[in-house]
Amino acid sequence: MTISLNTASLSILSREEIQKTFSHSDDKIVSVFLKTVTGLIIGSAAGAIFTALVAGGGGTIAAGAAIGGIFGWHLGLKQEIKNKRLQTVHLLLSQIEDPTLRASIQKIENVAARAFFNCPTEYYSLHHQIAEVTDEIQTKASSISQAWKRYLCALQGQPVRYSDGTNVVIDCSEHVKRCEGRQTPLTCSQVDATHPDYWKDLQQIEALEIECFGAENAHSASRLAQLFSSPQNSCLVVRDSSQSIVGFLHYRQEQRSDGETSLHITRVGRKADAAKQGIGESLFKMLYSQDLTQFSRVFLEVRQNNFAAQALYKKFGFQPDEIISNYYCYPTENAIVMNLDWDSYQLAAIA
Image (tube, rainbow, N blue to C red; front, side, top):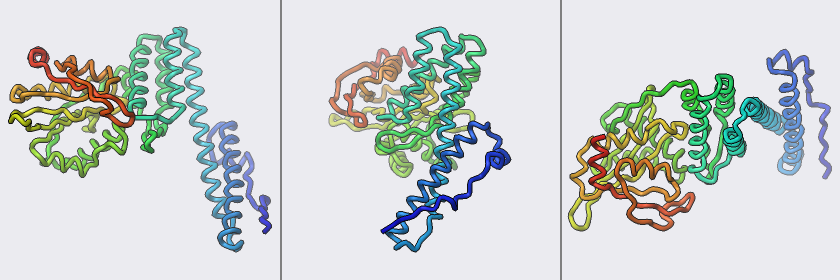
């Protein structure tokens, strides 16, 4: 069987025609255009092979060319987005003399460029590093601050993937606000099943859980509705000025074998780019507005290597009690069980 591909039938636009259609620079046009042509050729070849083998040669390469063109165009735009980010980070680094700060920024770029994370904790670590650099950048010259802001804007919207297949998009909007010295006003409340936006709230919590824990470990909105229908389960949330949920705390009352009741804090999470905004503190302060002394025990689990979370919990009176081996999956990790120390609780509640 002979398969022939006639590339002469492909209509090649002139450089001038492309310039009339797009307002990009010459280099960008050429880059995107070349990848589009490459995609057209590859797609045409694939279409020809498919029609020859499957359709008995009676088909056309038009469908393959169209798909290849779209694919090639996507590759071109994707490469240009990457080039823009690289240009902004190189310009930024050229203005910074501090070797430690330069290394931190380069580390962020290396991780972001990979666009793949073995687990959500790595993605959250990236945002924590961005928040720390943003705080340090604010002490530098305004030109450096502006260069950092441009880099954050170049990062905005970049898709990343977790190893379980979960897709998320890098959102740097809160980091940009932080860079500009603007602080998002936050409010804390309990999820209300009678509120007209109750289902919308559950969908937002589901989306946050996917970002925090991965799709396989997140509760669906339907599952959350089922959980919160029980009076033993409750959820506190933190909202920004647009009423979007940026943090949550799940807890439930558990009956012990001795007849006493414990309060188990089962999940705490926040939006990745909302690092260092006091969301965790807001959640625990609201939890502490209740009388927790009615419970014989208040406890939670935390990853053994999540030192930032452990510091927060200790601030609110929790103390390590025991270690549970391989408690967490994705990635597999030990859990530290932390109990609320009542003397520390009284001090934290007063503060």
